[in-house]
Length: 210
Length: 183
Image (cartoon, rainbow over all chains, first blue to last red; front, side):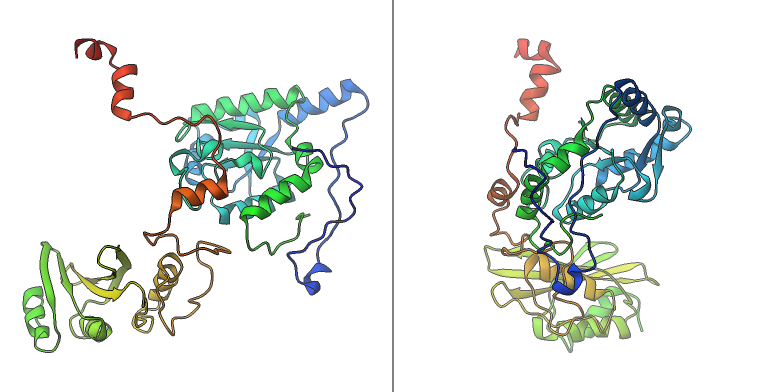
């Protein structure tokens, strides 16, 4: 992975037709700048960690394990963790198990629309190395080539207790300022885009979905 | 009109060349019909014999014999009985008459079969639209000559460090060490 500088100019938006190109922004995203005073940044991280909004987009079979989290038995709300219906309102993207190429396209669009700082948690073994679908024609084997993953929760499938442990681990990382996937994605945008376009053959969307 | 499937088949045997009749279960009958008569036969079952529901439609790839066997599973609500109509088509000349005029939802099955096996159904609506795969540029992935392992290695890059163990040996060693000592 090589870090590219941000003086590369606007995005090409090659996948769009000339008429469509006017309708989408070609601006590059800007990395999150921490507050200059360290105490303030720590406080803000503490606030972020205690108010996590999950994007309710069940991307794979593991999404069935997310539903019990919101029930009385597991009650993820007590950790300040709750689902939101749209990407614009969410800060945590839970990848629910395997991702096919078709789903990956939707994951990219949803992820880019989320407001930063944002975090990605991948559950199940499939995003790590393909799991039991490692030889499938349609399952992405190394998820972090395409989207920056802050936390992997392995298992097939991870049970709700493990997901809660993962949420606590994510909160710890955010509080320590180590959940920097958002900035990694923006700083290495060209590397991620090249990887994404290598497997998504019909790239008919803007290079960055604002 | 009789509800007994055997008498239905006997009745239709006068007009159609039905072969390989097999009673798989009490409520499931398999039979084979030539490609030319297949749609007319299915129409007869639907309109004449009350098999009004197309439960599913799929295909089996017999690469050794060079044929695809299309399967139309028809259901009779009144008799709670299913008939699976098998139709052999050539694996290279993969073209079959469409049944989207009999059941609207058959068009979706036919779209899927076109994408996954490359079978053509002329006249079927939206046949060439993408269904599950988007931007696919190889041979259809469910055909058995498609090498999914090498495709996955080449396209999705295996992560290093993945190990595979034989489940039986693994269980012996990890879970039941006492038993392995006695072996």
